[in-house]
Image 1: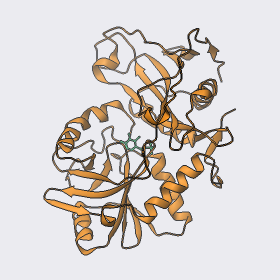
Image 2: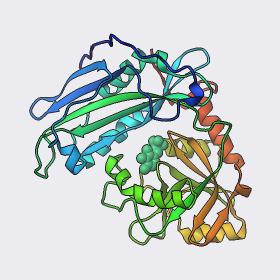
Image 3: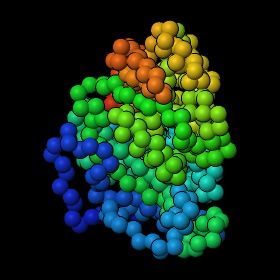
Length: 356
Ligand SMILES: *Cc1c(COP(=O)(O)O)cnc(C)c1O
């Protein structure tokens, strides 16, 4: 593991007083982490420096061919003042897979973990404390070769920035309305859908615009070939409770393998529920909504943790779920996951990592 050089800021920023108005991803802490890669040299020169603009050639490959990957996870402060990260090993493993798919040299796992721990620890006073708030951790890698040829870059930067974030739900869990998109697609098997890559989000914006205009909060994607099977929501995986069973689309190569998804599956299985990872067709959902067996639906992802779905819209079909409210299993998952993340509940799974 390489030692991190630390250069502290001479002009620390004022920390926000009103934690409820933090929003998401708008404010950044005093410092950031950077490490460089050059072919022949490998990853080198890890450093923490004051948060600042980076300088790149206009020809840097990331701007032209989107060779980029990112991660997202959160650090929380417990009531006793301990700092916890939630399953960071999972994000590091997923980052390695994203890198492999995008021909980016992966960052060694111990350097990745040490980078996040050292930066979060340095910025621990930035972690908000009000219920639902957290410090969002955004690691990412960009291709920096100043070259317009299409090939994997020979140089990269690995950067981590931190953003104090407000409560996703201002006043308790809130059900969302979701638009099932049957025209645009996000990803296809064989593409980069299972990598956490910026390019997937560029592909998603058009449908999001459409769903916004219709008054829906997020898009639920169908498979890229037949547009018949459920994949996932914008930045969340999707779960259903159908006739007592927990059902989620199986990871098929075009779905992002969420850490919160894995957490939901492990909890539901530990609670003795019947759980199925399989193909789920939109026709099955419509039929289940009509005959009353679609009991619950929720999205899972780091930002919202659990996002209950009150309405699903597919063409002219408007499916109201759990009376448009919050199902009991969605609520239990939210309470349990956030309880473990914030140190209020015992972490019997060993999911949290204390930063000190
Ligand atoms: C990050 C992400 C998710 C959720 O993953 P988590 O690890 O649970 O945060 C789901 N879908 C997409 C497209 C994502 O980018």
